[in-house]
Amino acid sequence: MSKFDSVIGLEVHVQLATASKMFCRCPNIFGKEPNSLVCPVCMGLPGILPVLNKKALDLGTRVALALNCAIQEKIIFERKHYFYPDLPKNFQISQYARPLGEEGKLDIKGETIRIKRVHLEEDAGKLIHTRDYSLVDLNRAGVPLLEIVSYPDISSASQAYDYLKELKLIVQYVGASSCDMEKGFLRCDANISLKEEGSPTLGVKVELKNMNSFRQVESALEYEIRRQEKILLSNKKVFQETRLWDEEKKITTVMRTKEEAHDYRYFPEPDLLPITIKEKDVETQKKSIPEMPARRRQRFSQQYYLGEKEIEIILSNMFLAEFFEASHKIYPNTKKVVNWIIGPLLEVLNSKGIETEKIQLTPDNFARLIKLASEGKVTNIVAKDILSQIIDKDADPERIVQEKGLSCVSNQEELTGLVKDAIESNPRAADDFRTGKEQALMFLVGQVMRKTRGKASPNTLKSLFIKILKEKP
Ligand SMILES: [Zn+2]
Image 1: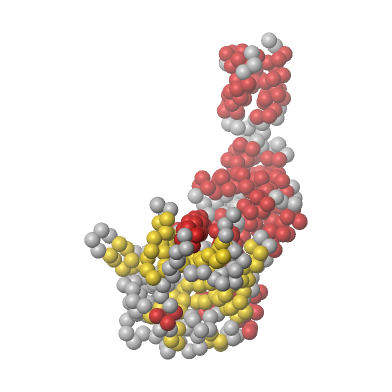
Image 2: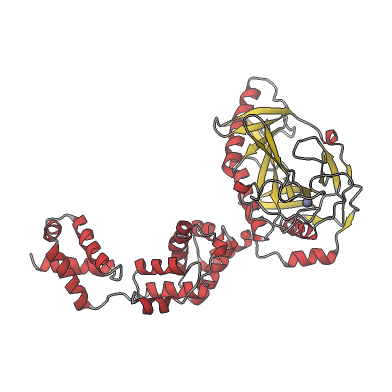
């Protein structure tokens, strides 16, 4: 057992899904030609005037409310000074003394992690390093970010992982960001210190950066806990510093010694007046918040008796959760609907590279397709094939079955004929089965399946083969 308690706090940056940037009209789009989405404001030219994007404020408010924060009546933007090649103004417009939201909380598996603050700020540009020189792309400069800072209430690497997963889900559910980490729409820094078990005195804090996935955050924290433990056990001192996670070597290395808030010389941005947050606007945002994942989790368990794993998958995407409920309303067979979503639906999306939100198939037609398969009117193979055809354009599955003649071959005479044919043309497989080789049966079933293009039920075929092969030695 460790003699130390880990004290972890997380700082999460989320890129808000606005149409334009935070203080200018440049589009907020990822992946465009470098420096094609810029104007004097986001390039930081002298004499420019920033104008706040109302949508960014609304989305930020929504997240802050979903995290149970108190929304400030008056907020101010401040200049945070530092020099960096991708920050042409030499300061970032951020919030310091009066952030948008304060004192929220997030419950993780029965434990509460307090949220210290939620504030708005602009993003910096991006540096592209080549071997001999670096390039600056300012497309991202001025894109709206929401920073969500937790209190150091997190006590383990795995709890940090759970917190991040839940936070991401909430931000996605309120529609504030897609949180796509590969595009850098969600970034996370962590700070961690160790203290003697049960002691009220905090240890020296180390900041961790450069983690590109929640798993990397977890690994970096685990590594850091071991590293600091070793130092403390040998009666040495942990230094206050910023360390970078090296995913390849699975270690952290020193980046710089810690700077303090006063190093940034925060002061109110003179070009933006303090903003009064109207009660009416807060109410509007409150109303736009859908049922949150935690509440939905509970309801799905009570209402549909879904298992933990099923809930996890279905709630991992709000669109999917709603698709499930709408389909279930039309065909209230929970097990079938869940299995069709977790199985074929996600498989088809995956194989076709379609995002869940882009499903065109209506829950109505999806439910009818499941019903067709469940009632044995089409085989599962055929149903899955139809699903793959209509997922991105929607169509009535029954009509496709009729038009293409995909109904299940259920005529006993026809099936018996097919089975006998298969036995005749594959005498060795038939003999193999008679002498106890089970795989031979699957081979024979496969022959008929191929001939009927998947329209015969494999189970019916199996029993027919067994019956006929045992009858006639
Ligand atoms: Zn601009």
